[in-house]
Image 1 (cartoon, rainbow, N blue to C red):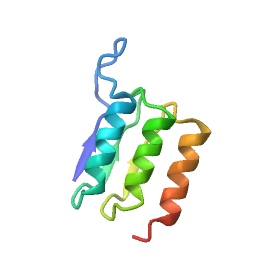
Image 2 (image 1 turned 90 degrees about the vertical axis):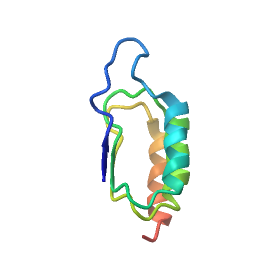
Image 3 (image 1 turned 180 degrees about the vertical axis):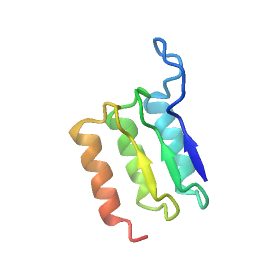
Image 4 (image 1 turned 45 degrees about the vertical axis):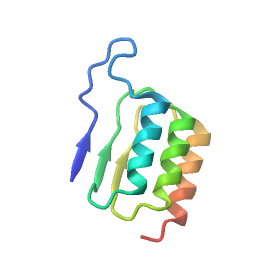
Length: 91
């Protein structure tokens, strides 16, 4: 199963999920058993806080095989959190 948010319209904050939206995705990913690809590429307006929330979910998630976060402002903190979560995930 594939979810692509690349096509969200962008004008000001319209269409941007932000840290709050990324955190909501993280909650869902903790219990996900069917979504294999999540594309959050393309200025979805979340940063380190959203990436850190996603990282916490990735530690438990065993279904997601592809995650794209390109062109978001996750910074070193968010990238480190994602990397550490993937290292700890044994799936």
